[in-house]
Length: 199
Image (cartoon, rainbow, N blue to C red; front, side, top):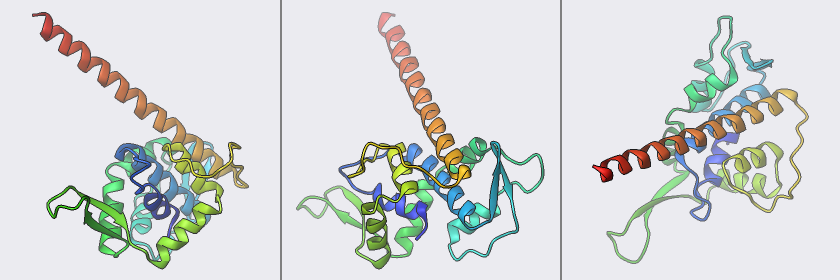
């Protein structure tokens, strides 16, 4: 399992609901960190510098690597997160369902109750849960960024790699920007409704 798949499975917990937009940005960040770990990319300032095309055994990670900008000036991390993150959580859900890692179940006793997706007890799911229990720093940081806090201590996780630190920081910035856009839209919607009520 990749960090992104681990993060997606952790985010499936109904007690910790995560917005799809937030999760998609964090998944794109997780993919980028895995590409750094695989030696497929390096980070130069705020730019993603691709290396030799990697051989990856994960379809979504291969798509992420194939989508890198390979001509200078290279893409900024933030721009890549927004571009790659578009509908990424839906892509992960579809892939994990196809791979048998997720299943659809009806909640409640009635056969026509609302349907929900939940993880299947597989070796990959158990590895994700173990990584979460062990408070793996990257997974913990990305989960925390989207509002999932486990048993982790209040200390900020430290990373050995400066590139990973940069990516996690940019993910945080992108999530704050997304929240600001939501708030602005909410205010505009409320103002528009007030105008109509005043007519």
